[in-house]
Length: 451
Image (cartoon, rainbow, N blue to C red; front, side, top):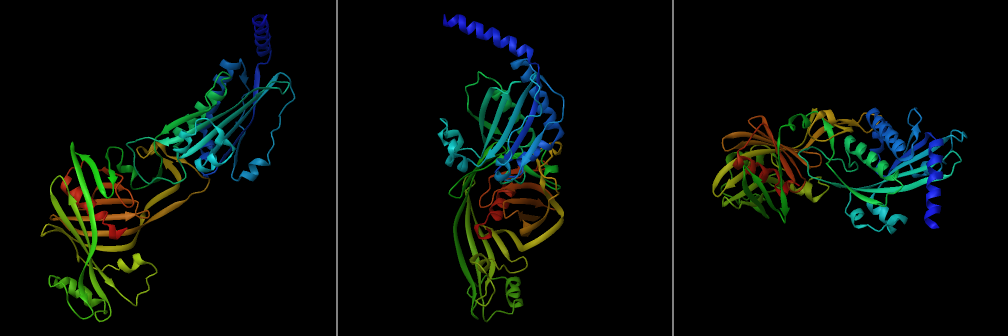
């Protein structure tokens, strides 16, 4: 008897679906705890993709025709604004169905501390960078709920050949965002779906700029594994291991007394130029490091002034009052490999980072807006190191709070490195492939006294 009842209900439902052949999107409401991501919804290509997907899903799953009109997208910027907007119906026409869509982005820790922490699969949520909720409510012409589903997508980052400056609050490119929304809608509009939480592995997202991105399309990306100041990576098919050792210091001049007899005439003249020979101490900040596989030991020595009457506001300022000129050294054993000067807070008005735009870090065609306003950041270097290394001129620019570094040899860009205290990855530009030079530049760039 139960089987006959089910069959009859199915037949009645099928007849009912055929009679109700229109659906209107009542609203697409969105909010992000992080801020910028939902602005992707303003992009015409994203809207076209959503419309096309909904047309297909509503037709195949419910035999409904989507009413052709602009998507009613509402982007909210505060949770209070979101709560104060109740759902409403555009029409009382009983031949028209109604679809409500909601798209939210949560911080994983906040998400887990809320009511959603009762989800069965929380392991995925805990390791994610961001959590999206895609919700749909589909009602018939009598305003009876036919489908009401929530899909939760935990965003994790996968490897990519791209590079650049990563935002702290955006975890999807425009393309990945569009794909996420379409996948979420497909699952939510499937009444037989039983999956509530999915993991989305997305490529990283980067800010657009006018000086990094143009070099990256044909660059070679090398990932670095770091463990307790030991860096491991592969270059030219060979494994490489660099190790940063102990941070020490050597006295050069202490209160009218020369301690280091090896101090060069240039260093002595720079010390005298300060006018503080009787009051300041002058020391070498010394960093020991090693190229493990090549069995080479390096020493980096940075000449600095310790002025007891200086206006330093932090310990870092006290120990990074570097003397001007080419008075800093990199030694390989007893041989001098490099001499260089260190300059702090040098600006470059020609280099700009666009905080209102994102890319995939590979191709400028992926550039997308995340704001109605333009936000341009002009680069100011935390450090600029310039000098000679192995007979060649070199420059290292450190910027974005020391998270990014550019490496130049003879005024040609040869590499871009990401990582604040240790290198996370680096991009080799223009086919540059001198492993020794690159490793030595990395050791100089990531000297612990500079961070």
